[in-house]
Image 1 (cartoon, rainbow over the protein chains, first blue to last red):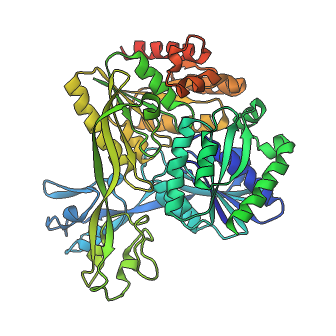
Image 2 (cartoon, chains in turn brown, blue; image 1 turned 120 degrees about the vertical axis):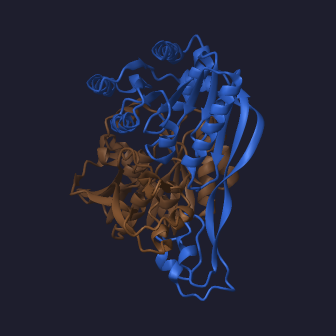
Image 3 (spheres, each protein chain N blue to C red; image 1 turned 90 degrees about the horizontal axis):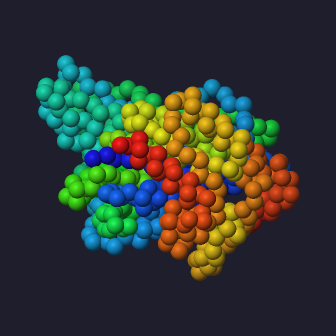
Length: 280
Length: 286
């Protein structure tokens, strides 16, 4: 089973939920935790895995053979992303705008376009006791995070449980993470910001037709509007985590909650059980 | 004219709250909500919207089943896995690149434009305000940010505002880069946690990559004194000026909930600390 932990709003506690859920599952079943927030990956700070050699993820960007190029402009006209431009006699490639789709090479009538790898980031894997772990890291200054997420997912062997920690937001990186999962846990907080972004995240989950449950973090600090919304939408609230300075402190120091405050283990075991029911 | 961007790497550290506080305290300003896939600044300001538009920024491939010979060339050409075994195109995975259109020997594919978000120009807290919301799952968050930033530049010029404040999105990728390029100052907002520090290092790398001078605000600073110290030490090593430490204060949320800015709440310790940090920022901006 593949379960994504998503949120819409950033900083609601996706990492807290993903890391602790994966930790309790890994105690008795083969489990993998994938940190798909490749722009700001944090799960490794909690899991502290021994990471192996990084594997580079690259996109193929065009390289123009000036000797063969006839200056016909077929490639510059075909590129949907404005990544190719004719400047004087030469076709220039703007690496950061290129999506690596390969259309320019297909359209070139003089076979003047080859391809070179442009690194976007890396994938690293490791494990911490029985928990298998993987994450991606987008290189600083690179824009395209989705190909790293897609490759991270594709190259991860299937196990009983895969927990995917999604990036915040509702854009393409979230879709890439949620594609093909069996269910989604939406983590929110009881604030107007949390509710607004939860609605957006629910929009994504509905579009993808995925079963979803909600975790309310920092419960008790805000109002009841998130709960009313969940009732109206028929979204089950599977766990409430109160605002508690001890939880904040263990989180700040990147400790795993179910290990630092063992009274939380039973709550996350129960959450795992509810997740199983949600996707069955 | 100076453009100031609020960024964080990690989500939920308080970018929007600080950007809103800044907007409350600054006289001549244009506000941009550039967190287009989880826009929240309009919840603080409830802008009076004067103009809206639909941004048509992405394309998707569609298949003409009468012409299609089911040869599968589109499936082998697509590098984004958007064509399934039945040769159906998933619009959520389609990048809109048109490689399949070029490759199709039966001329059965074409690209169609699709709406990818909505933008607005309005007025909030005495200032012009521009924002947008990306439709769920769209690819073009960075392009939409660029679109509203161009509009903001036009508005700021027409209205003659001295500054543009941009509330950015979390992360370090496409929309963040679109929010950062061409700005004159970045305010990085972090929180005292290992995650906050880790992501601060990454976002600092991005703003330095684009040669934007950065300052730092440590929000919810008293939630972990040791980590706040560690972050200050990091800032010191990196020559990153710290504008202030904001304490965790439940009055911030209470204020925002009733449409009041925390800096206007004299009993809020966080509000007072934000005021001080903003004064330091304004001093630096000159």
